[in-house]
Amino acid sequence: METVNQVSGAGVEREWEQGRVEWQKMCRKVERSPGRARAQQQGSGSSSTATAEQQKRQHINSNRSTGSRRKAFLKAVFTVLGSSAQRDHAFPVSASMAKPQPQAEDGLSSPDGGWGWVVVGVLFVTSALVFGLLRSLGVFFVEFVQHFDESAQAVSWITSIAVAIQQLLSPVGTALCNAYGARPVVMIGGFLSGLGLILASQATSLTHLYLTMGLITGSGWALVFTPTVASVMQYFTRRRSLAMALGFTGVGLSSFAFSPLFQLLVKVYAWRGAMLILGGLSLNIIACGALLRPLPAPKALEQKMVSDKERKKASCCSFFKRALIYLELSLLGERGFLTYTLALTLFNSGYFVPYVHLVAHSQHVGFSEYQAAFIISATGITDLVGRVVSGWLSDLRRMRLIHMLSLWSGLTGLFLMLLPAGSIEGSYAGLLVISLAYGFCAGAMTPLAFSAVPEIVGMQRMLSALGLMQLIESLGGLFGAPLSGWLKDQTGSFTASFLVAGGFILAGTLVLATLPHFCSCSPPPAPKNQSQSQNKGPESGLQYNAILSPSPSEAQHKTELIPPSEPSLQDLQNCQPDLQLSPLTTPTADDDTDYPKAL
Image 1 (spheres, helix red, strand yellow):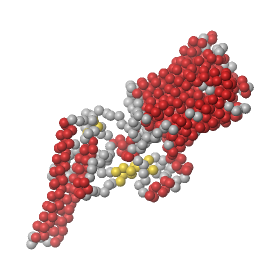
Image 2 (cartoon, helix red, strand yellow):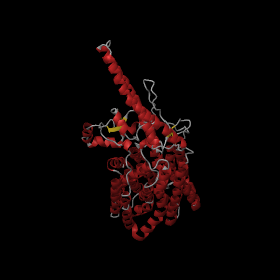
Image 3 (cartoon, one colour):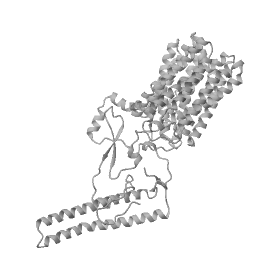
């Protein structure tokens, strides 16, 4: 693919003036060519020795010569017009002289700022009201055990069901987002998440909490989280990791603020009143969803049908077939996607265990309620710092995202396994220090886990990949916390729970090392789904129309190449420069006429 270098000044103006003069010269030559051809035909007709067959042959040869010159002229004019469209912006140079410029992925235009920072603010608030709230539900863990007189394993299913439903229904959220846009989907999700918490305040058994906090609230989170993350990724390309890190700082900040706040609410209003307040707080997601402004689709990638027949077929597709197209199930056949999803599933099995059981573990070893809540708050602060630091470091491009993710995940698993050792002999300082280290590493790995997805599957399928990825990793979130609670019931302490959870994260780190091109220090090759035409530049004399195949087996957008009709000389004289024409085509002529070359 040709690289482009920005040039300006006297050289640009001189080349442009030379091209304009050659263009005018060519117009005069082509205008005289038909006249010369007619003169030759008349001379041949007036000759007494010329036969009718010779006249016909000369006429055919004259037309062929004129047609050949016209085709060469069209190529030359296309080249000059393409250069004129870019003379103030870019000129093609050799790959050795050009400086690589960042390019939008899959042809999508990412402004890297502007309204994108408002979308980052939306991610900040929604992540705080989803995962920040989820992390702080450990405050209610002890209250549920005492009020319903149930085991730790049974109570752990509340959080596990919520996490599993959030991830299990993520493909539904992505499919709805593909069909209707992120704004209405996130607003509906905010309503469901608040409704579930409000209904949970009236629960009389754990089954009611499973249905309200687990099913209803988890469904709302599924419609909120993934579309918001995808919106941020679409608004940013060069500073994507930093934008993701800033958006996810809402999780760390809310973890710092929510734990003591929830403890105070439980003490003042009891757990039912506190749950009612959390439901009203979650309804603010509706206002956040209204701020998700969709990006305009570029004209070069506008998806349109090539005929009324194709449009009719697509409109008559069943809902199931269209759902398969939106879900992008072809990702399940790619090794890189499956390997990465398996690693995240192992991460998910141990990631939430400290946020569910760390408060209970702190109280179990003899610390007060507020001391236990402060540990979660302090962990949230280092989590916030870790997210910003990792986003900033990854944008420096000194290390590949996958390598940096492996580093942070390995440290996260190690510090998680060391948590029981920090509280030996009732050392509050030791437990606090290890918790701070764990929070920093856990926060650092979170934005990278999402930012690495476009590197593996491409930007075009990023939204569908996020949904399928969370669907599969929901298995880890479903069984991680209950397994930890079961180990506590069997052993009488949380030591085995933290050791097993840390082992899951370390196992996920080892799985990351099996990704294709993991050992390479350079970025991996472009995913196969990316359009080759976008990587190689525009083809000469071809127009691109994207069509949507109605077949479920072809659930990707394909490119149909349609040759344009040849314009007349009058059309060329009246035409305006087309911004989509390529300045890279060098014309070839069948005769010795001097045609203008590409600038």
